[in-house]
Length: 303
Image (spheres, rainbow, N blue to C red):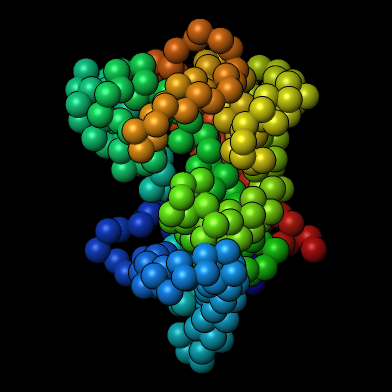
């Protein structure tokens, strides 16, 4: 199977099949390993946290390489590991569940469903807060869940994809600025920032391209300026681009672990996220993601 065909089939399987909960998933294995190693790593969190991050990422890459190199079943493993590392299908499906709950006026269900997608507290959110939280996580995770894994699958094959997924998983578990995790997750957070640096900007450019096709011109200079206001070097890019493309605001006050955090405003101030705007955002995310996928396939055909 050619690399271009592998990419195309993996993207299609991710969109059609997603991540069935009953199926074994390599990310769960990475998460279980990280949880098991945390007590040992906490004895010297900065050094051992870095060691665990590097070893787990390298181990994921080597393990993936070993599986796809097996005779007879190697191609099947390549397909499974390829589409299992992408998460556009599951991201959009989960986002739709929240949006449809909001459309039905069931804010309690929307809060509960949103809690599976975000790290902020959701119990106190009103309808507008749930809608904004959904918009922010949908935009940000376009990079984290699809474009960045696709990028590493394109440039590094299945082993490159799973090295990235291992780092991303460790960052999602340990990459918090809390007394427990700040030193432990520092290496994972920095490696994740580096690995997603270009994909985050590619996501924003793809969203800007879709907006242009729709007849909406957004300033990438303004997107870059707003993106730099966030603590994360990457999260602001897809968020600012999505906010500008749809014409609704992101950022503001949110509560994390009992603490209120004020985030910079992105996009038009004072314009709330409605169910209609969320549906439009879903279309933007899907179009930009498939645009990136098509570009990756063409790249593999040409290079």
